[in-house]
Length: 251
Image 1 (tube, rainbow, N blue to C red):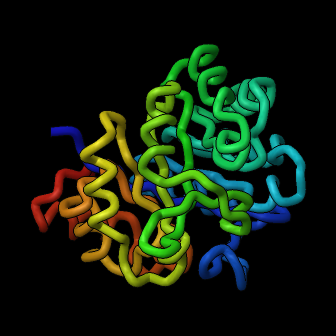
Image 2 (cartoon, rainbow, N blue to C red):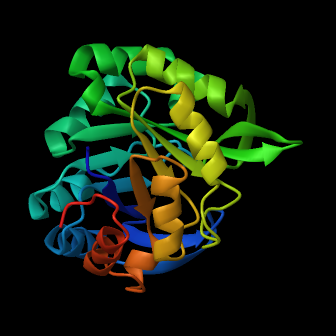
């Protein structure tokens, strides 16, 4: 059985790691280089860096900061935020990223997924999907949840897979930062229609929350931020507890 992955996420703006609720009311959570080094040493399986203001500010991700983090860690490193061209994806690969995460630009131009996957390989492409429930339907949003689209979560996730995505990172904007748990039924439904890994994001507040999304939601990985940044549930403690619950994680 493939081990479940535990992935700390660095939401970065202005060169600092931040965390809020539903991507607003942000508060400082520390230096991303220091945090990245800490999580790698603690045994995190991967690290995700999201430049959360790059798309809104219509600029590229901070390549220099990505380089600094990459030099300090020895675990797979995914970088996202404002990536809209094949050239930008290639620059991030050269800067030390192992994977890129595309979101708003891919919704606007789905061919971006095909291009990155065909040029670098599907294993290099993570398609991040932010969605919220509107009148009973999961509607895809862009620009950090600020703009609604006409895309629906399940059909967009399936299209992304068909275009070459190596994995899906789904964030429930209704749950993000609330620490009230993940929408497990939705993750299970994604697992039913996809053959690629699904990373769960948005809502982790306890060990039980993460255990549920990995088991009931059948997610391949759990991504979290606040519980790690503020040392509420350190990565080693989380992994030991998950192992005690008979969930296969690397320790």
